[in-house]
Length: 94
Image (cartoon, rainbow, N blue to C red; front, side, top):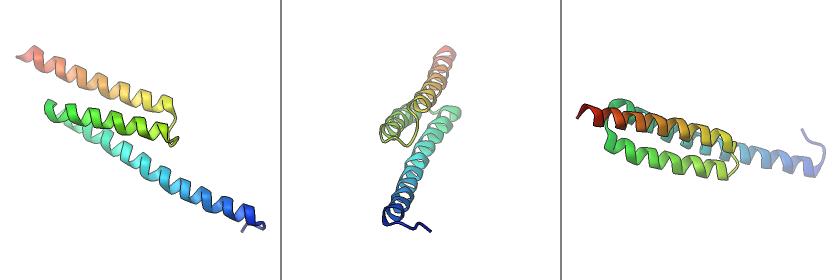
């Protein structure tokens, strides 16, 4: 237990921020995994919209400070590479 009023406030603030960051990070990982599953299933139309949404959510997560910007860039880059590879493979089969 904190002994000072300011320390008690800091504990409350940290708990609120932790919960907020946790929700934001969960939203990011969920959208990234949905996009990944769409790519793996071969549904490129759905994957295209999900990849764009994942990029948007990941960027917002980074902007809010919940995740390091380099992590966001790495996740988006890898997802985009997988999407482009799947797209190129689909066009090669046609």
